[in-house]
Length: 342
Image (tube, rainbow, N blue to C red; front, side):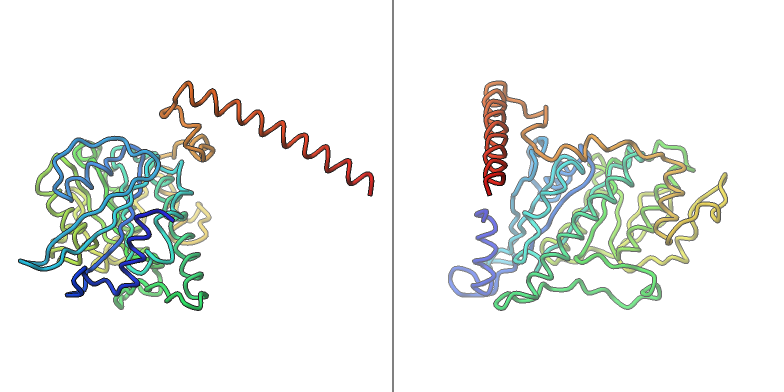
């Protein structure tokens, strides 16, 4: 078990109190995932007020944030996990999403608005991976004799409650690189904006568009981040105008306000969609055909990623792989021999 997870477990078992046995210490876990090179690290550093250059995330990285509630009071802690590589390393969701972390877990999905042709595929794959792991560990926690059931994500009663499918944990969707996105044709911006509004409302998530080049947008983004990390008020700003950066807290939108998928050259009834979400997907992909991500799906092993190549280590690894393959072949032959003798 990673040392950071041991810290979370120890704090949970100790009742979350500080070292002197005083006031309870709040510990929450945030899991950041999203588009490859979509600005996840830069946004995280700005939200933590860390003045340091961002570096490419290697697979899965851990850090933490602390915040004092007042003078001479214990500091609340936010455990922060960041998944790199876009969808290529989605299997690693099992590390931050555990039976321990789900008690106070929130998910942040950061999507690169400047690359709409990869947006739906990235969003769909990562949310599916995170949701499957959340449901798995929640079931494990409920079945365990000593484990307490994972805290369920509570959503307020909404007029669309029969039509939405709330994500298993609090979810924040951040559209990054708004400075590039705002240069797009207005009709294309409208398609992306309305589609993300639909997705966010469907999952009972909050949605905000941001850019690290805008102090005002980053301040609002930090408000949403701090709400999940430390339980602070996220503010009451609401903006649903597609000509402006979207800022929509969870529960403040509705399907009637969002409207139908924006189509001009296609008959919606001819798309043969299985459900509303599938209809939005088909319309979106008509406007923005999604890039082929088969190569990313196949790249499960970070050791095979050319970005992290080390000639000497890679040569030794190749030799060991060959030895392992030969061992498997020899073992298979010996087992076949035993089967024939019996």
